[in-house]
Image (tube, rainbow, N blue to C red):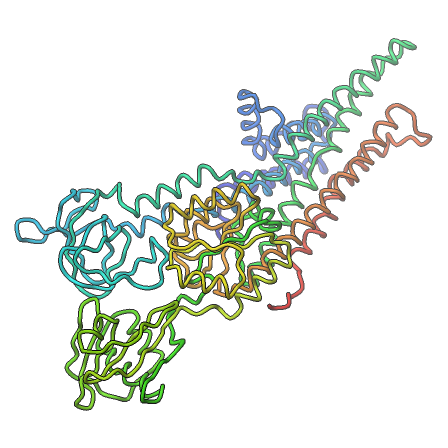
Length: 632
């Protein structure tokens, strides 16, 4: 919060507080009266409320009269008119502080477009006249020959003309298994070359490529996503015109009726009561306590590994109808591991050790994962890579081949294909089949429990949207009892699916990849997995789970519901207290109550404003003192 204290936005508040203290001191020690009293307090009011008054006038010119700025303008000027200058200034200062925190939260909520630019390389290497040339990506023309080295991202959509390499496609497709690219393979911008040099022919310009289309989707989603208006804005649209019109009628109708009835001139008295009515009706308790409730909830969630990016998303997260999940990195670990071993004529451990020794010479992601999971004490020599098929090496004088069925056929082995999800590595030694190893992206251990907990919280439907292949997607959906599964989706297709689901109810989307950014932005509330998730997904989301524990998602929903419940309690309490005091004011002014409240009315008004505000604040502080939730 150090940045908050130095923010330029709060400078008028600091200066306003200082001027208010000086005015109160002058009032106490010099006892000014009349116009001099107002002159003491006027600078503080103008400094504290200048931007609010300007906003109110600007909105009035646009035809937007009854908003929170107009309400605070009338309340502060009304307090001045009845001689409660300090009250009017304090009300404005409280409002400015609450407004600052609300705007601060919303301003930090999104930076998706800036984050997405990271997947679009600024430059590309092209081969022209036999020599390499580094140019801006936007200058690449259709037909240019690109040189894509290991570790570089593809700048524009292109087709491989020469070379073989493992290509990470997760940024665009969400597919966890790397693509084995060779001549004729289509590469989309944003793909990451992982292992070998590739030459590829550009088939689209930078602004028409896949990464640029993802960026456009996020921009479109940001425009279409109707950000939840702050409570005070929606409340003021109804509350402000009622209060202002009631005060105006109260200042005119009763004294007019009394004048016509018995000739008494009480216009001044009723005008005083009408202004007092406005002071009493000032929503100070709501302006402070409601945002404080949300920020208390934000703090409580943050201490439990959930970051709400602002109060605006808590209400949507409290009651979602449909929970939509990405697969890789969200429901699964996003890391390949050995799940099955099919050995023939040898022990499983021996087959794993032999295959690991051979794969140590490969930089393919599957090989890297296998070697990390199964360290081998064997020594392999004469490593040879067979592009798009596998690898081979000499171990203890025998040639061991590890790869797909195509490589097995080349070495004279014809094993029965092993179907199902994941990647299968077949192994043979000197033309003799040894067995196979299945490697898959495993489920997170808490995924099933987390989904069951969400159903218990009232989620009506669960959906999985993934770019992965059919077998992998359906296996995960079946294991987790997910209601609907769609696979092989690109970002634009995920975006369209979210648009369709929003017609059925409020959509909660959970994802972790760059390809999830448009869907996260478009959904009613987006939650990103923050530990391994991409920057684009984290910045596009409304909330972030700072670990990869899916069990935090039901916790986030429960904390959001408690926060909303406490905020509503403050609303009911504040409005009820003010309604009672306003009723007393009306009855006292009309002499319809046996006890005359007029001498004490301003003190009662102060309690209805400041006292109620303090009680509501104490209640709001409960949001930040939530007891530790039982972990799933």
